[in-house]
Image (tube, rainbow, N blue to C red; front, side, top):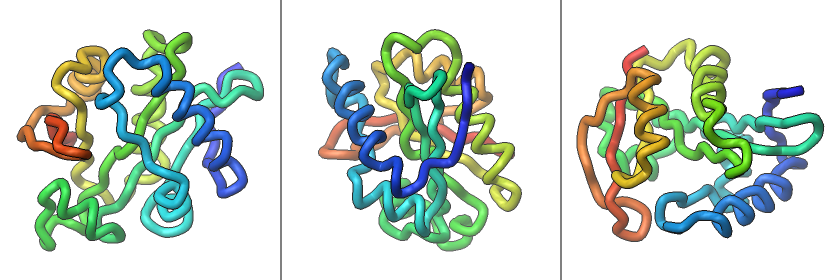
Length: 165
């Protein structure tokens, strides 16, 4: 049975273990630049929310949302103006174990976030590596559009995608 629930500080260790497993199986490691434990703690406690996707009791994926009004550094990385910060949030991390991919769980997590945490949000942003075709397809299915491309996270190119809520 699938279950989506908020991630707490007690879950951070399991998220880090999940991140390591996901990265170890990627052909191209630069496609995923996950939040470190301190960043996850900051998201959980102040700048946004983190949710986990569980299959039975096993954490198989997670996603984070960060509100631009609460995170100046991420707002600068994305180029968000002060005027738009209160209206904008970033779908920062989303990751699913490889054996559970292809079931649109990324979309499930994005929809859950939009439904539960975006009542004051007008714009959702995400960044996806240009060669990550599966995530780009999910983003387009989610009605996101590419608005720019920039180098992020150690100079790796990323598309910036926008969804208007």
